[in-house]
Length: 217
Image 1: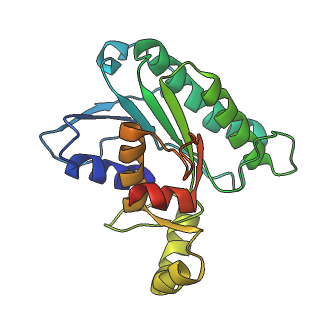
Image 2: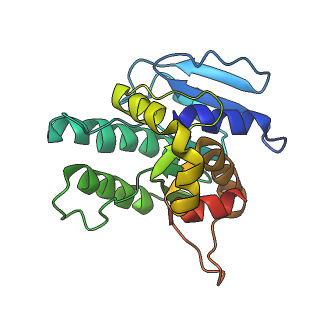
């Protein structure tokens, strides 16, 4: 769902010259700026690595729900899959900015009780250690789809459908916890272009929902 929104904003932005998507299925989007690679094995990019060179940024939006999933499998699909892509891209594009969609509540200590939060924390920490030009962790909380984006997770689709009438109220009551797919996409583009300094000018590497919204503005 997030990837759909981010792709839309990238294709709309006049400062972006070209977009490449890599996924297990085609997006169905047609645009002269867009090229797609349908790739079955998201743990191994050796067959397509020649096509992954020359990019300024990667917006990594793949992810799975931890609901009902064994810890080992969730770690394989979260940490393992992410790092397979990141290490390949870092080697091919050392001047790249890498932006990872994590989640609110991620455990940077990797020692907390919540399994998914520990795994996300481990993933974030490892990404920040890679020698990219820059890497940023986006931690959205509740995400509102704006332009027909749909989650592949049935539980998320049901929750979004149930809460849809209350989106305006949620944004007023909890402005620091609600972002939209549009805001996430815009924020990723701006951060890739200009970084993410705080109000004092110091760099930030981890951005929570309110900071994502600030960057989108």
